[in-house]
Image 1 (cartoon, rainbow, N blue to C red):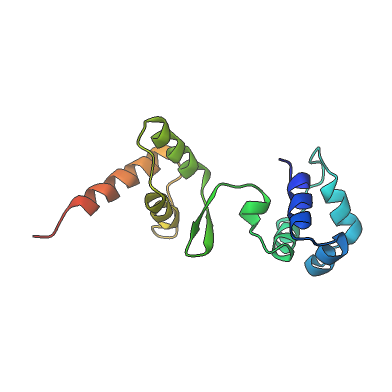
Image 2 (image 1 turned 30 degrees about the horizontal axis):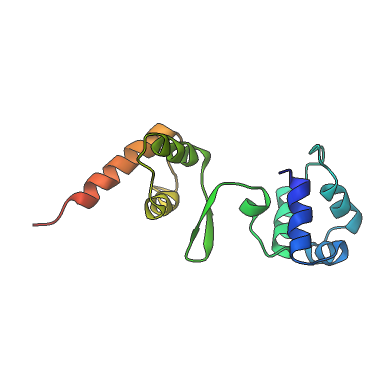
Length: 137
C-alpha cells in the first residue's frame, strides 16, 4: 500500500476531514490532498511533516510508513532492517523468535549502537540466549 493510500485510509478510519488533519499537522489542506493522491510517490514530504501528520492521526511514524515494528508496553519500537532480516532468517529455519526475544533485541543498545547486519544480530541473540540459560550456583 502506498503512502498516499495509507494516509487516506488512516484519515478516513479516524473519520477526520482533510481540514482537520491539515490544521492539526500545521500543513496546508492542498498539500495533504496532494499527498493522498500521490500514488506514484513523486512527492517527498520531510520527516517533520510526516511526523506531524502521524501525530495528527494519532498514529506512529512506523505505522504511517508501514515500517516493521513491535509494541512494547504501549510503545511501538521500529525494527532495524537487519533485525527484520534476522527475524525472517530464524522463521525460515523453523526457529521463529518469540515476541519477547524480538522485543528484547529491538531495545538492546551497547554504547548507543545496535548490530548492523543479520549475522551480528544472530551472534548477539546466541550470546544472550546462552547467558540466559546459565544459572548462578
